[in-house]
Length: 288
Ligand code: PMP
Image 1 (cartoon, helix red, strand yellow):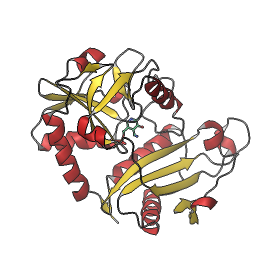
Image 2: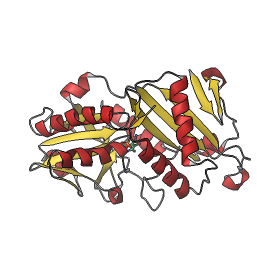
Image 3: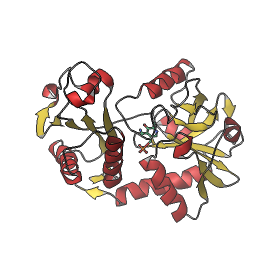
């Protein structure tokens, strides 16, 4: 496997960065997870835009144009003959001294890994996930905006570990007001009285690219969809529930905290959305 590292394609074993990189020392950096379907990179422009927004939020000046980053992503996929898979795009703050100050890091590093990913075992896509609510709350935006896809994912990792302690593969994270924010690496949707609802960014949801495509798909199918505040009560009373994310794609949820959602099976609206999603990802995107 070839990895893109600061302008060069190097062998995986040689893809190394300094232990003085603040990406390692402090989680100071940003990333994107991107899918490629049948040579089409799904919503690359949207991922590159979010990458730039994350950088701006962290005052990380990217010394590359959007075109240069896009070229690096495409070049890495081509070099690895990646037709279907998962791309990890990373910018670290770069090498500096041992103090927190980002000003000691003049040169950010750009990394692209083109690989594959399987977040959940295939049977869960058929039968649905049973998830739990975890005690770890999604970060308050006043502390660190959950809209930033930074290299510091400890809040999500704490929640992921708690989910596992409770025997679940994914978890609902509440915000500090007790409202549903999202899952550890996925956005959450419910169907209530036939309408698809999902928390907004203000409630602590990452503005997911897959989430965004669900809005387009739902509108195209003539389904009602909106951002809405959600509590656990709303999930208990939902007809359906599903999660979305680049890694997860679209996956049904059939239970929360041991309670069945709807009739405990993936629902009709989820199935409609899933079918349209699979079609769309092969049709739209940046052709390699
Ligand atoms: N929420 C979190 C916390 C995430 O890390 C991700 C991405 N893995 C998502 C939601 C889903 O976003 P996207 O559809 O852009 O992958």
